[in-house]
Image (cartoon, rainbow, N blue to C red; front, side, top):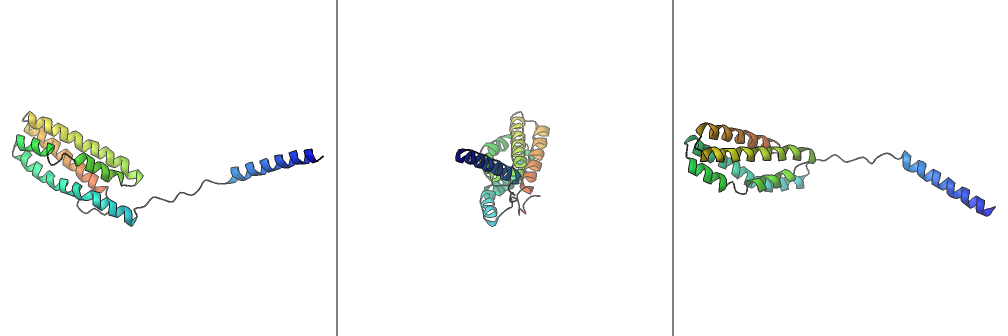
Length: 152
């Protein structure tokens, strides 16, 4: 008798536990927000990116003057760490902003690579087009950054 009662009691506990687990809802996820600490981290990574954005103006002057050598040197010199800096900054954004930021980074560098190739070929029309596209994507990237007032 005791053995039968123990088996029934075990079965009853399994059924109750299963019922309670199945009835519990998913835990409520706290929405991601930009905390003051996260904003401070973003501002640290934003500094070299803002300097690079100002450098885009210098690159634009080289492109406008058809100064092919300086345009190519500027892309490979001062912009040498730009991909790293943009990626670090993108990784500090909220998850739903990160994908758009990383897509824009890829676009910026595709334009810079085509600009470099066009400058090597001394193609003024293509360098101007790629510069303008890179600048537009750079500004779109900066608009994703919370609290950033430098995006044109």
